[in-house]
Image (tube, rainbow, N blue to C red; front, side, top):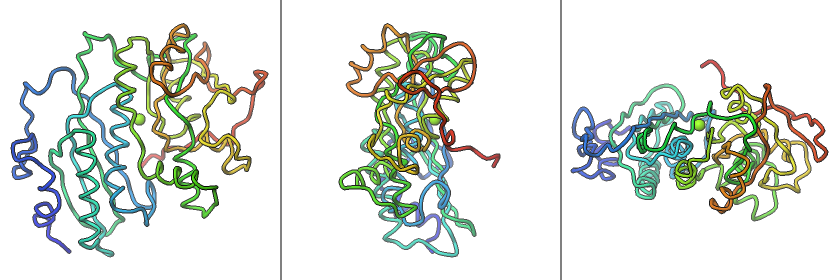
Length: 327
Ligand SMILES: [Mg+2]
């Protein structure tokens, strides 16, 4: 087992610029000078635990990237730009990770720090009896609220607004299914689904575009599944949400089985596309400007979720997605 200081020196210090906000990972705290903060700071944290949020044999080079990206997806949903992150890594003592694993993990992290232009500010490494766990906190910046009106809060949905997504739904879910249940999918869908499950693509540019358009009401990222998250938005806005199943861009519309078909794809999680509401008159133009996504339904007076068929008949969904426990 590598000692903590050794581990930080060997694998993480190389990812940090000594002149950066993380002070070369040499001090007790990171420090961000006030001049670097033009606007509101937004913060978010997510923890991934082996066996709960990722699979024991997921490759180390994608783990740190996934932990980072699910947080970046939260920033994207507010139209924020990434600034820095903190990483808390808890390694399993009973089955220690070897040097090749740690190097691959750190290389993956370094790759995404570059790609998304954010700094590693600091963190913590421990080891204990539990499974591998990694927790990433991300800091982002938003032009000040006064400049652009209220943030795209989940509660900002308005009666009559169109409901839209920035891209296909169900790919990450299909990836999880084929990896955890040994199910078959035709190539290249199989490879695409596995890649998306392991490496979500946070819609940062899309989030900024939506925010700057000034036309968006509520916005959130889809992590628990389209149905569950639409319901979250409707509840937060005090409204009812209607989804037209035929309008939802599915990862694979032709899969017919109950465990992989359309209803399963809109119920599963791990999409990390953005879900947003906007005035109906602006919706088409916004989707055009995004160059991706679709209008899939609307917010109306009332409460709850209605999944509608081609003749506006009510469809039943198997379940509404990932349910958070109280832990
Ligand atoms: Mg979120």
